[in-house]
Length: 117
Image 1 (cartoon, rainbow, N blue to C red):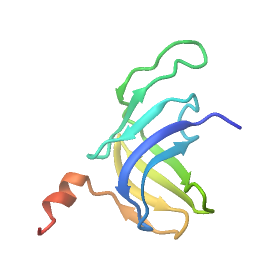
Image 2: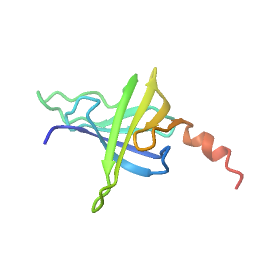
Image 3: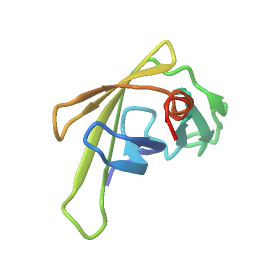
Image 4: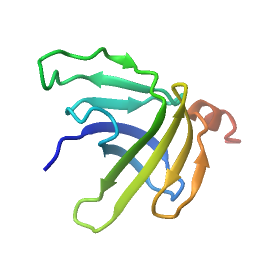
């Protein structure tokens, strides 16, 4: 079993899946924990200090590029995999492997303000 990082992302994906906890091998693969904030910025919230006991800075890491995240549902064969595309630290697009669909990311505050309820 290889190393990975944990990524929390509370958002409805292009295929309708609403996950929360994902794994990724696109970052340092040191057991660190990250969260995609509602405005679409990637933050490190825990640094393991692996492999040399030096902890990395917490907070916004201004990630630029593709962040591949994935998860499976316990007790099923259901696999969910996505690429989150960040440009200059901002999440712009979500690509879904299951449907080959794409979704332009809208921060949750924009979604909530456009909700007519």
